[in-house]
Image (cartoon, rainbow, N blue to C red; front, side):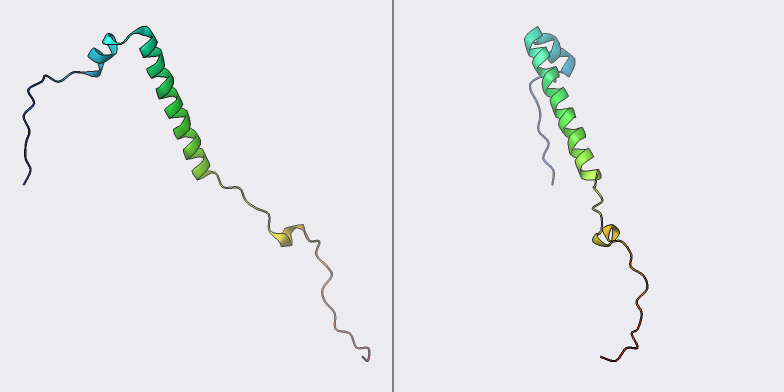
Length: 73
């Protein structure tokens, strides 16, 4: 069963809060949002970027085909 709460305080929109902030507080909020966005982009980039490690056999030069020796041991 879901209980519903009644709010006695009126809802405040983000625009109303923004206008009430000082210029310094607005600049701080913008810097914080920019930092969070940057961190998100870096995190997404790190999780989707995978370096392909070279295989060991790629760096070894191929030899000629093996031959069977007919010489006595």
